[in-house]
Picture 1: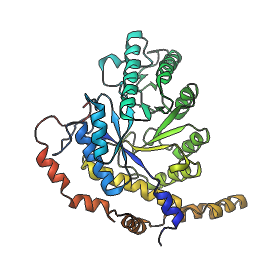
Picture 2 (picture 1 turned 90 degrees about the vertical axis):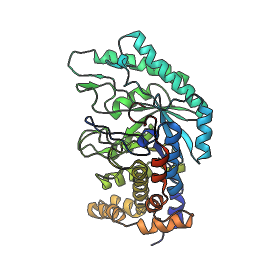
Picture 3 (picture 1 turned 30 degrees about the vertical axis):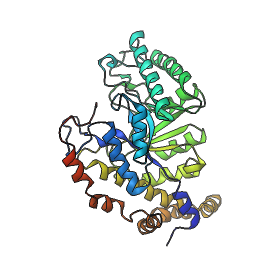
Picture 4 (picture 1 turned 90 degrees about the horizontal axis):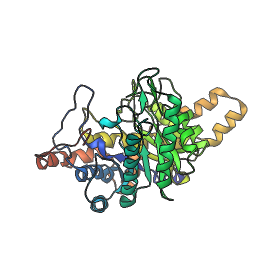
Length: 388
């Protein structure tokens, strides 16, 4: 089965942004593991990310994390990215690795600390102006560990006031994207624990404020595709942070734990008009490659997303709607499952070759010798990782 022309054309629309930090060292609370050839600065991170796009044509942009990816000259970094065939994408703020933010940042009671956190985000927007980035993504570690530790309502009010000032600085062609997380590092309550809280905050800001959905940031048994549907319905699904989880915020390769969930999510994105040129929802990975090589890990992830997208595009929408109208439960479910169980790997390999790409991007990359090359060249200096 070769892809029909309409499906082949839709596959062309896919773009999955890579996170710069996925190319640095990472680990668990117990150990961060080093790897030969790990990037030592943002320039080397981008060079590695460009390898993923070179072999897959799926990842044309790289997200930055500030201050981890701070440089003296962002115009130089932007040109470096363009010379490697990619663009600089989302700018991620960081208010969770400074002693001042021990009790919060944008929701903090102390005016000085809240001012510091706001100013950091304004700096991030200045960087966006230099890099040509569209999105400022905010994930807040703010919250409390104990009942009575702070006034939860007051924290919501202060966070709203802080976000208002940041949003006022966002350009006409830029967006503020607010991420949520059910727990960690705060364990009694998080100030933005769920999609509803994120939606309430961004809806109060304006049209250029949206929600980021990280697929690992939910309670067990949460129906994530329902959230996807609802945010698309409300016009507020700004972006995804794709990863996979077995327990909590595991940040594993997307689709590794539950490929069917990934299929269901992308199916809802397509139904809701959030995919490709039809929509404005950005696909991004947010992963930590703790024990596997970073570049192959990112290649595997983008290929997993591509495969589930191809399967979701195969769903017979007319037949599915007819079965739903008839109330034929098993037929409707069977139509969806037929698409999910279709093995599209051979067709994707053929499709890639028709575009001048390797049929097997992973094998082609591993055969290129790039990993051995950077292991030999990147000797000395400090390897990038959490906090750098």
